[in-house]
Amino acid sequence: MKKFTKQTYINWYKDMLFWRKFEDKLAALYIQQKVRGFLHLYNGQEAVLAGALHAMGENDKMITAYRNHVQPIGLGVDPKRIMAELLGKVTGTSKGMGGSMHIFSPEHNFYGGHGIVGGQIPLGAGLAFADKYFNRDGVTLTYFGDGAARQGSLHETFNMAINWKLPVVFICENNGYAMGTSVERTANHDEIWKLGLGYEMPCGPVDGMNPMKVAEAMHEAIERARRGDGPTLLDIKTYRYRGHSMSDAQKYRTKNEVDEYKKIDPISQVLDIIYKKKYASEDEVKEWDAEVKSKVLECQKFAEESPFPEKQQLYDMVYEQEDYPFLKHR
Ligand SMILES: Cc1ncc(C[n+]2csc(CCOP(=O)(O)OP(=O)(O)O)c2C)c(N)n1
Ligand SMILES: [Mg+2]
Image 1 (tube, rainbow, N blue to C red):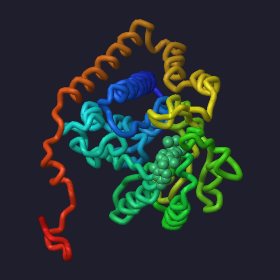
Image 2: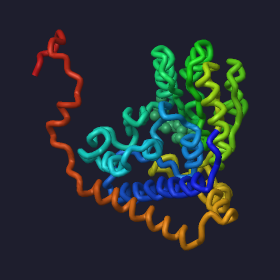
Image 3: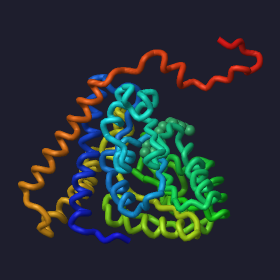
Image 4: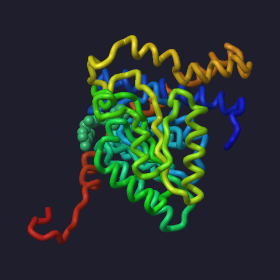
């Protein structure tokens, strides 16, 4: 695996801070009703992405659910286009037609952005099947939540993926809750990684607040998939600081619980290493913080100044079959 160097920690700090501030801005824009519909934020879970990116290869892909704004940024999509998408603007990644839950950019190996809980699990295996079938070097990182882990399609997918040794890594981003339902309440035991055992699929728990631990586990799983030994299930234990979506009164947990997780926040963990190893001074860190702030403002400016799509675009984006029987073509 690539070593963890001074640059790794600096990049992790800047990237994770940018993702968090980018989403804090989205939350503010949501309250101003500039972002409409749903908005599910990633705050707290950043180490899961930072660690994965460290271990991924050039042709590896990512697919996830609706908590999907920062992964494409990590894969190289221009964050201005993502903010524009959330504001419904024509300059967005899907010309403003997808919105918060449907960021998509196959050019950057990012396959969404899915609103149906667990719906992306079989799709991830499908992407991996295509890579195997066409002899392409590529591993698909298939993310889903702890709630999605209770969907039946997960079992059908696990069975096929291990039977055909597909190049896929199944990543349960276990943030403890599915909306307001805790993991403990959804099954007889709460160790989601054990779901792999019934399929003899390599599996295990991972500390999801620490990007180094995530990178190590991802590296092992990705390399296993790449050499043809099939899937792995990682149960990455993480936490979201904000509610499930913007409309969540959070009655199912205490403020104290949230504060306990903030003590092991991934961004502060990385900053501690930077200071301990004397990779940067406080003044340098302040400069990075200012850079992040102005990058977020640039995204906001771009998104707010971009136009909404023309009404005609609605018709350009609808599937239409001119000779479809029974319906009179318009
Ligand atoms: C098939 C389906 N059932 C229910 C919902 C409503 N719903 C949206 S998110 C969610 C919770 C999912 O929780 P989890 O998989 O843990 O992901 P997290 O939000 O914690 O990232 C539910 C039940 C849905 N979108 N799709
Ligand atoms: Mg969850």
